[in-house]
Amino acid sequence: MFTLRRYRPADQQAVEQLHVTVLKETGAYLGRGPWDDDVYAIEEHYLNNGGEFLIGECDGKIVAMGALKRTDAERAEIKRMRVLPEYQGRGYGQRLLEALEARARALGYRLLHLDTSVLQTAAQRLYTKNGFREVGRSFYQQAQSSGESESRPLEKILYEKPLI
Image (cartoon, rainbow, N blue to C red; front, top):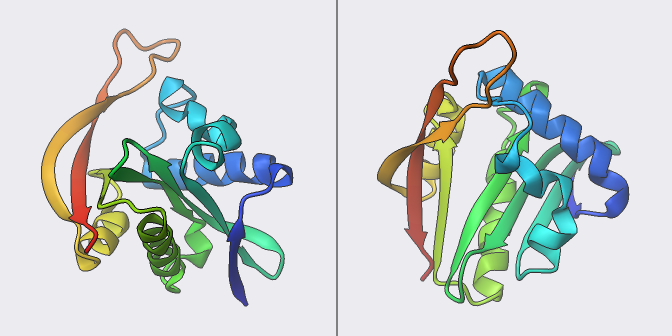
């Protein structure tokens, strides 16, 4: 049975592992860098700053996560939507997104925004199915690893959705 609950500090290691595992599976992992500092400081970036961080469990195992991050008084960003590959296609991402949208409304936000990489096609389908519209494109900058002479950018799609 799949259940959603709020993040607890004891979840930290599982959250970090889930984050890396899912991004590696899609080919979107850029290595550890400042772009994912929030994953290593959940309370600071989300829970203590007008946001939310939800954990999805199946039989006590953390298999999904998603977050809501305040960006200003009326806007919040959907972040860190992850579902382990072997648990995808079961509606868990949909349930996470619905719960985060409900929390955003309860907190008084009027607009949600997010980004996802061009490689994460399942995420793109989830967001467009739920009323998010593409508003632009940009790039994540990949970390330079030893042996590489230059870093490679990864294209991202920017989405928005007004909350009515």
